[in-house]
Length: 280
Image 1: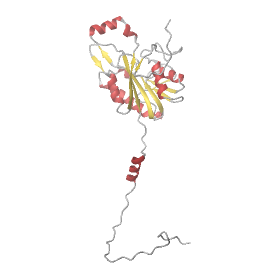
Image 2: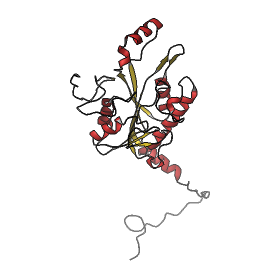
Image 3: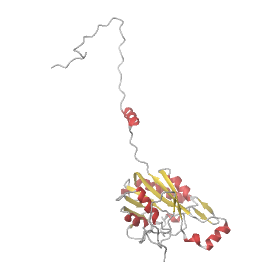
Image 4: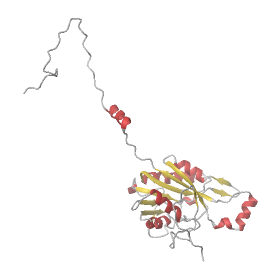
């Protein structure tokens, strides 16, 4: 019998940990799907950065975890994937999201492939077929990030969940750092969270022995990059007045006539105020 799952609570530090892939009595996504996102991560993000009826999009939807969590939270959701696993996920390349989504989305969550570690699809367009050792992977992910920026509303948030990679005999690939660098070119950093990985391979003796003897580390955490699309800036105060002044055409001043040295006569005053009164 599996241990009882602790209640869900909003995470308040930058180290997140939950002992189960799923929360509650139901399942979110498919428990047999390799590389599925722990559902409590998405739950926490939606609690903090969205409100009921907001639109949530997942461009790499996998087994549909984001869709299930969004519905639990009374959020609208759209899921896309190059290899849909269920009827409510649309077959779409994350590099080419639907054009009608431009500036319509309240939150984007994405858990993209981390290089070529898992076989996601036979589709040659699959980003999971691109090795993080080469530039093609990052070029593809830059296109994905550009699409995320396009569909987000100004001021809306997104979360990207990713792990670094180590390939024995080839070396370490800091995928997280590389993707964060791409993200911050277009989006404002909000925070970076470390998420503890409860991967069964971490407990397998042969993996631990290989890491010890090979002098490398098993991946014990994932990055969660939380970013924000800059809000539309509306000029106000001094900056607004300055822009208004720049926009106005400059008035042409007439040259003043030279003053005569002759004594000028005092003008006749009209009424008490010294100004001409309008005629009746």
